[in-house]
Image (tube, rainbow, N blue to C red; front, side, top):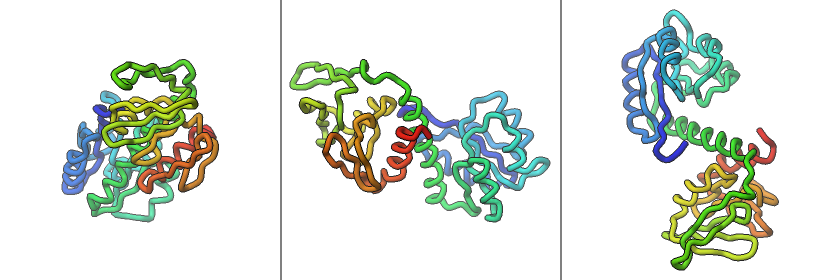
Length: 243
């Protein structure tokens, strides 16, 4: 998911107040775009056939066709966040590989935690896709001391934030370029690189060891940021174990 790309969302909910709350929450999230609200699953089926929907917010107790039954019918399932007032369906829900399970009334903070998992899944999907590409011949040009310098992706060990600049560490040297770490993350996010900390991006191909708190690259230990721990753990597992 690029910086400007949004996830198309569909709410499937027969309670007007619950649907209104979800609509309001979705409209507050920059990477989500609401495409419609359906009062029942049969109407939702028609929309899914006509439009590209990335995420559904699905109530379990729906008229005509129940939410979980509807989900089992779908050959290609969008990412799904279930919404319900009943906690006893949680086990059945996660057997359908849903992203999250929200209990009504839904607090915005809990909603935010759920939708952030959507971003994480998109990043992991990109990592899996990039793991099959040949990184050895890929390169980028960076402005270094008023010269455009070619840097092969395969030579990069890691990238460090220097506020308005970034330092690129390669096997032989290090280069400083005037790009912030967020810009570097965007450049390398689908090229077998992973941000592990607000100050560090690492080449997954150069990782030699890792734990829950640090990643070792070429004999150097780099910390894993607290807010990045889940993403890093899943990203490393996806890359090294192919899951």
